[in-house]
Length: 68
Image (cartoon, rainbow, N blue to C red; front, side, top):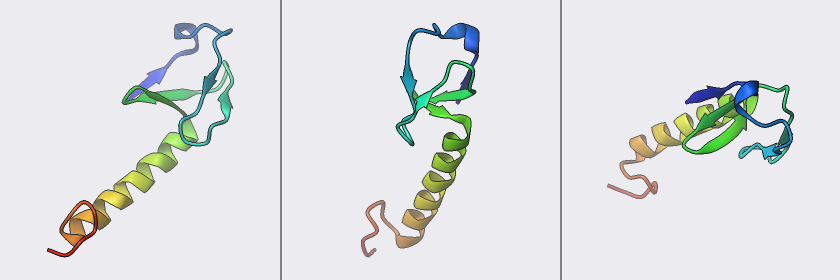
C-alpha cells in the first residue's frame, strides 16, 4: 500500500476510485495498492471486506467455499 501525494499526480489527470467508481479530486487523499487507486475511506472498506472474505474462505476449507 502506498499513499500518493498530490505533487506526484498531474492535477489535469483524472483518477477514478476502483471501489466506488467516483472521481478522486486532486486535493483528496488517495491510496494505491496492487496497481489500483482508491479514496482513503474506500480502501479501508475494501480492505475490511477482503479480510472478511479471506477469513470465511479459510473456515470453509477452500477458496471457493466448497466442502473439504
